[in-house]
Length: 319
Image 1 (cartoon, one colour):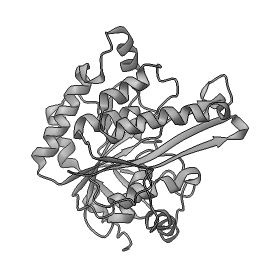
Image 2 (cartoon, one colour; image 1 turned 180 degrees about the horizontal axis):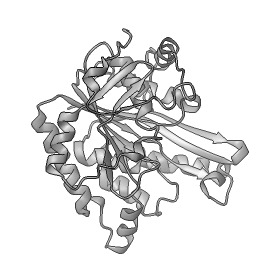
Image 3 (cartoon, one colour; image 1 turned 60 degrees about the vertical axis):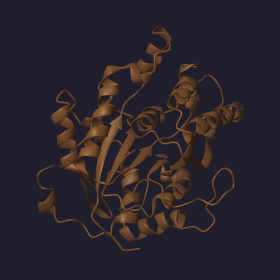
């Protein structure tokens, strides 16, 4: 693999550059050490799907975790292996927003820097998006401390840093209001929400009109349970139950059944706090993938807080 050569600053001068906030904390601040760490989980000959078959390359959409690398790094590997031969010009990143509220979708024009260098945000696509959606939020404060896009960017740079590519960074905020609406408006889906549907249709058109070869990266974890997440129980007592629920969700995700995926979560009022719901559902409605494969599934239990997070990775292939 080639090392990333940083793009010169004058080419990114029109927009702010978001610093690598988690370098030296969640991953190495030195490029060579970071590359070695990422390579150790991407390039393995034994990547298998959950069904036990070899992971194929050629994915045009992946879902990867955003859990701390120090906890769940290995689950990222098969997703980025599946994406590793992509020739996409731009990667649309749909990621969970842990800090932003208000608008459902929060893009940013900021470019991203990591120990691999600078990756440019696709201002052409974002300008076209804002031209068609002038009411779309321009407050990107939520991106400042967010890790869910940065973690995916370091993998993309490691794989494709030898060539030019851009990203379209979009945070997707909480679906709690849409889950409430599901229960008060005859099981209405997010597609019945005007803000959601208009954004989805507009992004589809903008990407298509750009003429660019786009791939999608979804940054999403699954359940968050236990006392740290305000549950009145030790997560260890619920791990088997949550795994069973997660398997239902993974099956719906694999087959692109967005309505089934949302209904399964909404029916229990998101009792397991699936933080990946907003970006995953959004991607399913934007891309309508059907040929998906679950690649990894893990649970991380934190004994001192009696809490747990579950997370997975998936890849989607064109027919």
